[in-house]
Image (cartoon, rainbow, N blue to C red; front, side):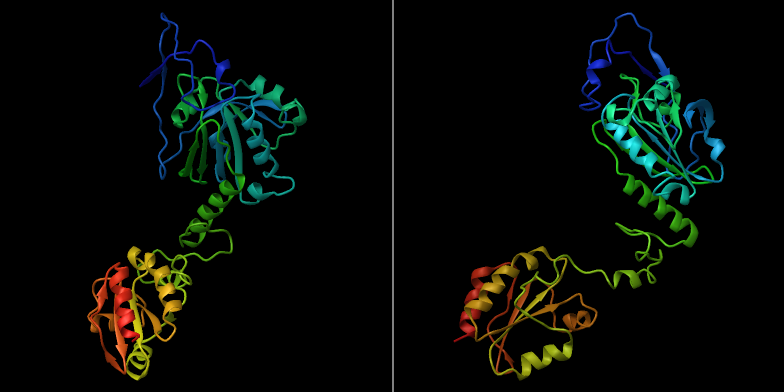
Length: 354
């Protein structure tokens, strides 16, 4: 079990500079308060709870089990009558039913929770929004006055007796699917919470997995080594158009390589690179300067990882990258240059251009 001591004053932390900015002086003769350990694990059953709450402007009791068969988005906040907290609660409440309807339409019950009393919650709701209050609320606000729920969900700051900004998405079977926890000064994004919920639901319904920044209507992938390639085939390398020398001619096939190096009468420089190669990327701007400096030389780039070129790269014996080969009159001339070597590379181009 875990223990905590009561600070002399909580008022110094009403601005919530951070969870670590607290008064370190304690009463010398106080008894420790024992809290249960965190019981939350993603993929495991969420701790059940029952507690007083304000629902539709009335004080009542709610339990997690009341929402069996629904998704639940349970989010903790530090304290009533503070500053960031009302912006979050209002933002979530306004997206729950009327207007957006997003969470209700997604079969999800939003629940806000703090360690304040239910009477304080009610007073805050009855305070107009333009005076720092919550006003009309479409979601329950749970009063975790014993701090038992916050402790079991792993968000309780024991020395302050308040909760971090933890958010938990629980599926209809009562299993935790998602957890995020912010420090006190950092408000959350309703859009991101909704996007995450939608991704969880999409996977539950379709079995496909949702890649980074997925939104409804975006492409998903099958969690299989072969079938996932359908998704990855459309993934572009970072700055692919401008990297590795934006002014270089692109070689798209072995046939194009053979025609360029064997049939071109003028001097040709071929840059062998790979998108994962940092040195290849770094030398790209220098290659563009060589293109401008030696207008009579054809510069081309050969992606050794491209499906149409990967086998050819092996046949050509390309190993170290970046690699540069030089051709004139259909023959390879000048010693190849490998690695990030600007001067040897320019010297070879200058010799080729004679």
